[in-house]
Length: 428
Image (cartoon, rainbow, N blue to C red; front, top):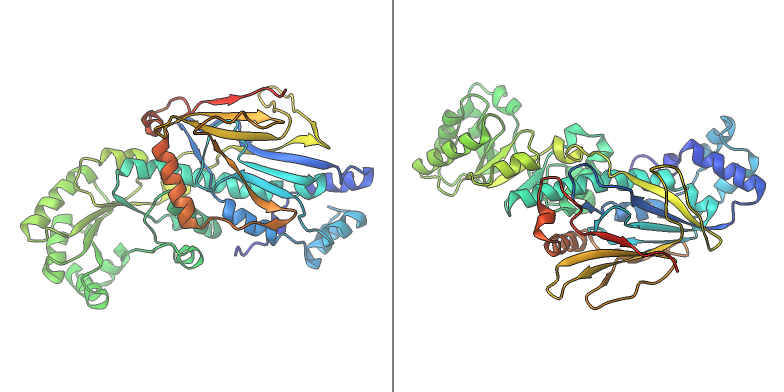
């Protein structure tokens, strides 16, 4: 689990509202909050739901301990009444939402939190912190997986993120289809396959490149990857094969014009008899750079900074809004930030062939189900008790199937309309 306790992610203004609602008697009003995005990041045609499994675990453990409550009381964040309420806090409501690995579009109600006003509003920052980060990483990673056209990817961005965000990013990238992560904490915590090789520092440590390669092969065997671009790439490849022989598993190249270098490296490896030695490339790769290498003899990509920062969209732009109070729809009317009142239900419509054609959202009702419709919301928490969640592998497979189902235009990296249009049916 995170080194930061879930309750400490509560925002000051949330506890301000809890204190005031307890004072005026509205804290126990039954409410519905929804998480959705008003728009997708610029250039994106779909979003990816990720982080739900992490979030439900954190809500299950969401408690305020005496030291935290003392801090809040001592600093004037809460009064005595609110402090007692926090001491007794347990989420007792319901949470429903899109499956992890599901695609979403503008307006998709990807998470619905129902319960008393106070118990729901205190979760806002936690919910948005987890989902905005993980959904952003997963969407970027999914685009990279599409651009890679079946070639493997390794997530290696831990050094470009907060230490806990790095673990979450590795999970989101794996959900999106990455094959490996270099983050060992993610490997231990989530069972994600790990992979990696030595850095340039290991080569520089030794008197020469051959000595460094010989040490690595002696320790790890020929089923390892040698980094060959510390000095001269062509000579690095020659040294690697001279030390490990043609059975060397892979070489990694982390700099230069990768399109040209990949071609030259493949030709050189083949000439040395290392026809099965793979080529791994890395170095500030994003989905566009990966797509540009599609025709080159690359066997695996390593992505770091771009994937853990959402490749230019570090947040999914999700919001957490109150849409219903005591069964009555409520709406926000602010310009450009208006909401649609009432709890929503959503279905994804498909052709008989399985291609998605439309997402239909119905406020305050049940959609008129048609053949090949798929209901998008599932129960995550019922009366405070978590339901059995899909495994990470199951969610990974779900996303794979979702990406197959959208029209091919939706997989383009160029800007365009959402892959699936969204229709909101007016409440009756």
